[in-house]
Length: 214
Ligand SMILES: C[S@@+](CC[C@H](N)C(=O)[O-])C[C@H]1O[C@@H](n2cnc3c(N)ncnc32)[C@H](O)[C@@H]1O
Image (spheres, protein in one colour):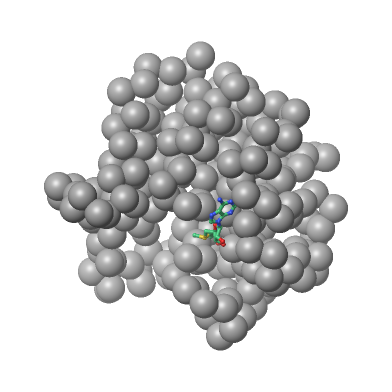
């Protein structure tokens, strides 16, 4: 579901910095060769992620849900000198697709894609994280937040994608619609937790941006 009329959306895109040639090719290749290309962040959201990352200048970024690597490449644009981005992807085939584009980028040495289930892989991280991008299975969003919280530095950020879930979060969720229920729970948890300051940005399918206060 698009929240903005197409005309306004197009206007926003045409008044936003262009994506790089590599990101453009990755976007096209994903649309032509990969299932569910709507999962890719895309031009406008990609520039938002890049802008936020550039504002934060993180040393360590954790991404949960690589898919074809579009958002990883956007977030990497803001890494501090010598900074690293670790991205976790459960599907080995899609991870290989992402790695080809990451290797062709200027961030090849800074981005590591790890194949695995994020619920287990997060436990192996020892570094203090400055920025986490949650964009994998919706039913685990709250689990991911709880798992990364102790590893996130005070003043660090969590960005979670799809928190508006095509608008379904504002309706009473059907008992069987576990994803909508999980996202409602996630949004409510962040909103009520005084360890975070948060803004739900109605960009694309909704980005929750939360800063760790304590
Ligand atoms: C929405 S896509 C990510 C899109 C990408 N971040 C972007 O913006 O271009 C979600 C990805 O999470 C992966 N995924 C789902 N469950 C996962 C899990 N438990 N651990 C790691 N990755 C998972 C899926 O295979 C899929 O590639």
